[in-house]
Length: 299
Image (cartoon, rainbow, N blue to C red; front, side, top):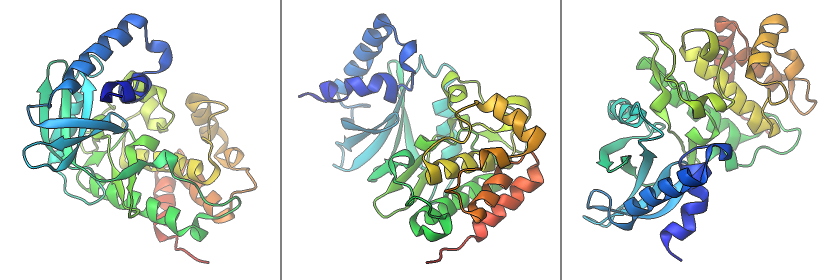
């Protein structure tokens, strides 16, 4: 079976990031043909793609020296504002063990490609959560994941960058349990303020903060997203899936987060941290961030 036969079914909703209802037969055929042509020969005359490994990213062999790399490939029809080029520019100025580092950018026909060193990793969304009725403080693996996320985000925020697009598939874990944050194409300058770049796929995903809808993004906007990821990790369900973000934000402003945190499986300490991270009050969100940072593993 060829590479294209192995991955084509997944690409339509996974690599391109399009919801299934957006695909027409004509679009599928055209995007399939374009990517198929791209993958038939070494990209940039150098990188031979082997397989799809996670969202928009492929494992490839550098034929110059035989090393493995990760190629992040995005169709220009899905990236008319060249957000991938912007992600490369941002990541090129960063150096942190928990942030992805790209060392090259290529343009091939209808695609933009970022190149990073290869590492064995899985997306956060496939990592098993703690046992039922287990607190984060009793789950050393989960606690390490979230502390590493804090390390990476604190570094970004110190550089004046708000990630602005945190979600499950922008967090990778390697075989040693080390976290890598990817997907910085939606990031914004926290010092200059401003809204995240408009992107239908980003809006469709349920990981925005109240500021995504009504105000300028700040580092605390990322804290809110971490709260969502933490809730999902602990309970394997999105905290606002029943009502959607707009209604949830209104209810958070009116009556706080308590009604969203009634699940008896939540321990009081976890509930308190989540309540603070979901607060419309920025100062309270900072307190929740600090409480998560101070949480220690115990038996």
